[in-house]
Length: 432
Image 1 (cartoon, rainbow, N blue to C red):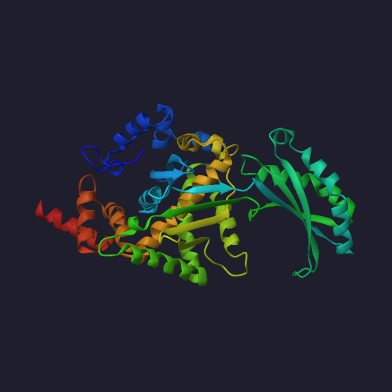
Image 2 (cartoon, rainbow, N blue to C red; image 1 turned 90 degrees about the vertical axis):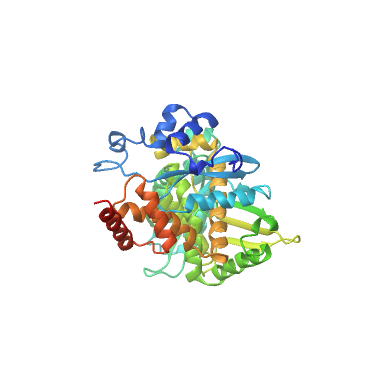
């Protein structure tokens, strides 16, 4: 699946839309119907959407691209990315090609354990109530296991029970019970929420208190995904920049994010550009993933970088990324949305853990692409070249004029809609 840059074979991004669809038909195991779903020709219909949320009036599309060159745990992967921001897909593909020279991405995940929380109020003696809950641990886990026998047969179900005392809050002390629940290949919200709601009556009887909130936590720090890569030093040469200069610039840019939350917010947003795009393309809950990632970045009490960058003994650039990643391949939109189903098939994943390993690798690649740009030519040059097309369209360009106008805006280094409109008027006057 490596992209060819020699001979007569054009690069993937130089192909027309029709040619890209034909390429998918030739190089993947997707059916014509699944390619049509990815193309938007036979994607989510308004009738299907009407069964997914309330008050449906239609559907809303995002551009869907494919990131190339990814090797994750030794396997080549085509990665679908749904995103509106220019340069994201190109950046991920470029960084994946750099990582490919060092063997690609190595990724793994922890067990798919999610946390269900129960807030227990009105306790005359919270400490004693906490101990009574811990003493009833086995009985509570057994009751939670009976909630979803299908999940239990698949190897999932409750794993542990923890109880924390919140000593200081705006309403005084209360208990928080954590039900640790293995959700297997699901995102997990429905299974976990059902289980903690089932336990509420038993918990009230044991403690003598009142259970208020019973809900999943999106800080999925029991369900982590980790990726690492090595970029051979020679791959970092760029224009007049020596490879050592690029490497050290990337490390210095990361150090800025590690030390300063203002920089870390933008640094991590760059990671999520890649993560969210795959999460959305596969019908998963990107809002939950975002919430978990940013909470995890602040787990020390100070918001910091999710990734790390350094160099090994040979001077090669090495990067790692660790973050919560609660994604699934069963249930919800992953099975209802035709394009999401096709996206999962395109990646060839058979478990949620495989999907998470790909997603965290994309996040690390996206981070590398952004840091490399910042450490060399700046973030705007490549980004604005792609953004120029959107500006050209917004100014009213159509057909072949879009590329022509975009190229002129980039040459002038004035990628602005007022200048685009001015150029279009000049062209119109010449031909009038």
